[in-house]
Length: 600
Image (cartoon, rainbow, N blue to C red):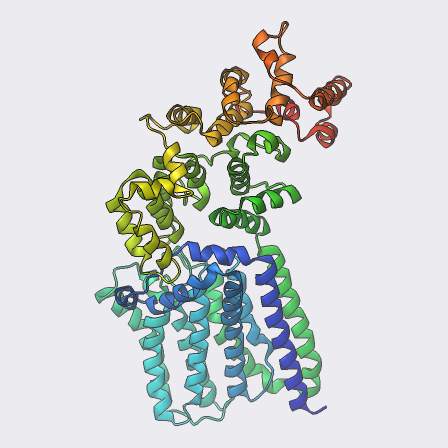
């Protein structure tokens, strides 16, 4: 096999393998991270929005990133676009190396793409960064196509400034790459291009303009930190910071050019036939190792639950939890909300090893309020609390962007509460989007139409269940809010199940018994399983069972299971929580004896 055929086949194999790995990983293992990126932005289809982005450094590529991210609400689009742009980084890098060094395969060209793909595993890195890196490398390809020295020189100066303003920090990679290319040409180390006239002066000019341009814009145009003036916010949500891995991505293409410029002539074809497959294996093995160890698969599961709550897909949430009980606070919150919405909280809560904070996420003044935090308040009818948490999320995003999910939910709360002018303001923003326009236009029809709102399948129920009393909100006394809901609407079954679950999780048997009589008005065919297990246990604590508790029927199955539990507990089970958990872990009795509260 001659060298050209060998290089061509190896190149095709490596490219195909890389593309398939990207497609499979994002499609089957990490797609929920991508889908949630769409919820974290509000992309407006307006000229003013475009003009705003073009007015600051890196804004153009941020606009491009947001444009493509708006399609991420469709999983297949999220996977395809992410794979495409990451692949473009490697493909363009190969074009640079093949055009300058006259070869078909350069496996190191995969390094920048693999590196940025690993960065995207972190929720704070942006798709716009991958687009920027790809465009900057294609800029180098364009530069190499300018055979005439004068045209190349002019394009070099223009592209440095253009890359800086349009793409942000990756202009560093472009500028360093063309400087190295000209140095190699100057010393005849590589390339078939003519040397620039006054090459040392031009090369020095490239370096100078690369340094002076951000300093000039920082001084006279941008209102930003010096570091941000060099890098921009196109890559990382915390724009005042420059993560070291991102800097390494910027330096990777120049480093690869430098390596090949000195190494290519020193390695024979026979040695390359051996070294290239070995390098490819090591490279892909390292990439796979990075995907496995840097990907947060627990976070992926959490985000999956958050996304399902957005879709109100309660059945799938419960089905997922039945396969594997969620362990994170967002997954547990999604599960309890799904159980509440399907009227199963009073029968299945303790089948999923619940904890005291599973019903509501405690408010935390640090970091961004989770997207899901407002959801139980919204569906229960505590719309003021839902709005408060929506605003907390809007105000605490790392990059100051407005999550469309919170805009939409806040508008819904305002419609339900009759704050129509405020709702119209947020709906107007949604009307300027591609995928929320239809929903916003339909929602506008509900403004000031009380009858229409009351007939709405979701908003009507929430409006009917809304709390009508004023009170001070305290998370540690959330039961007071739930009691207020019941006072406002004694038929609010979801609120009833929440308050009973809250007391059972708190092991507050007095309050549980206090509100137990309301069970008769909630339309249950029989006493729910969790209530039966709690009641039959509470009865064992009395020397003489109060007569009023005997009116609640306990099934024989529950009585028999309690007897088995008591026998096992007395025969040493009290000191063997793991063994008891295997047999009785889905009962309330196990929770009572083997779950400690902070105040216990």
